[in-house]
Length: 239
Image 1 (cartoon, rainbow, N blue to C red):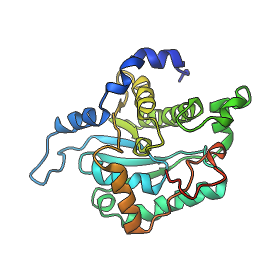
Image 2 (spheres, rainbow, N blue to C red; image 1 turned 90 degrees about the vertical axis):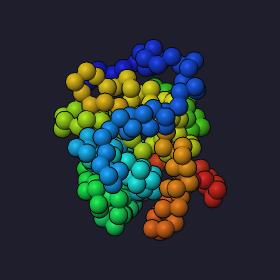
Image 3 (cartoon, helix red, strand yellow; image 1 turned 45 degrees about the vertical axis):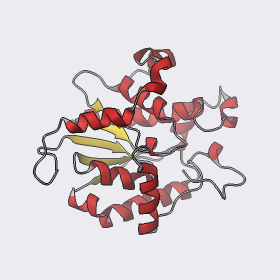
C-alpha cells in the first residue's frame, strides 16, 4: 500500500473539527445497529481484527467488545524497547487471555506478528528527523508510530477478510485518539475492512483497565514502549 501523506490524512477529516468528534458515540452508534439476542450477544458477529499493545490495555477492550464482535488480537509492536520488554508484554497477553472469562467465552484469538525494531525506526524516519527523539508523547513521532502499526493491522485484516479493524491504543490518556481515528479512517477502502471508531478511555474504560489489572495481577509497564519514551523517573507514570 502506498504511504498516505499527512496532508491527505488531515483532508479526510477536517482538523479543526477533530476536537468536537465524540468517537465513543460513533462506536456506540455502530454497535446499536447490530442485531442482538436475548442475552445481549450480537447475532452473526462481525469479525474484528484488534491491534493490541499489551494485556492491560486489552483487558477492558475485550470485556467491552467481545459481546459484539468475533475478535482476533494482532500483536504487532516492533516499537517496544528492549526486546525483553517486548517479550514480557507479549507473554503477559498470552497468559492473560486464556484465563479472562470474556476472552474464553467469546473465543478471542491471538496472532503474533514479527518483531523487527528497524521497521519502527524506518517508519518514524528518525535518521532524517532526529528531533523527533526529544518530542513528548502525542507528537509527530507518536503519530507515525500509530500509523505504521495501523497499516499493518489494516493489511492483515484485508488479506484475511475481516469486517472491521481497530486498536486498543486509544484507551491510554497518553495517546491521541484524534490522530488514531484519523489514521484509521484514512486507511479503510471500498470493499476492505471498515475502521471501528473508538476512544476506549471514555465510559470509564481506562479506570476499568486499572481495576482488571489489579484483579488479575497484570504487569503494567511504566513507559509507552519505544526507547524515546523511557523516562529517568517513571515512578508515577503508567500508560
